[in-house]
Length: 197
Image (cartoon, rainbow, N blue to C red; front, side, top):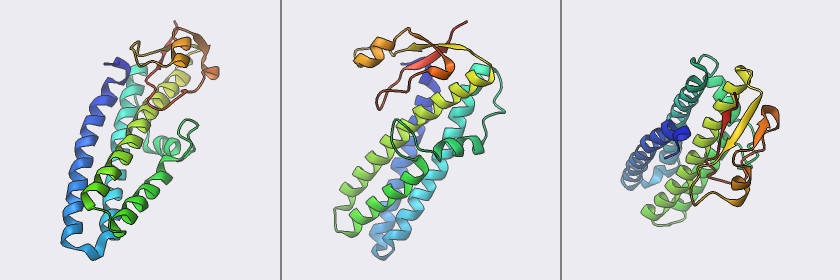
């Protein structure tokens, strides 16, 4: 396990269980009241958004505290600012994508797709995005910590396993000025930065 993302991984396990429970709850609601699909799915995605943001804030505070010894800089406003801007890796804004995913699930159910199948697919899409952004929140909190601590140089570190891509492998061990660190080259990249002392 990558130690840099250890807390993030624990948080993701919790979120996965939470999402499964919420989807199951919503499926029961839809089965008992098929006329309120839109309200049921809206409530589902609102609950998932709130809990995801709450957990992302814990992830960010944890990473920032790990690197600086305090966490006062990381606030919900800081997090919403990050989640409300377009991400170069994903190409979308997390907060806007929530409604797109909700609409997709709602339309799948209303068009007559099997509810279990539609929910399973919607859960997979939601969790994939939530997982990617949990890593990005962790990375962003680390960058904020390095900036606030006036770190000048950082070293690119890979997960050092068989899944490391060619680009990441070629960056492993490279040292960059903090303001010139290249972005992550692909989804699910678990490379991280380490302060050069």
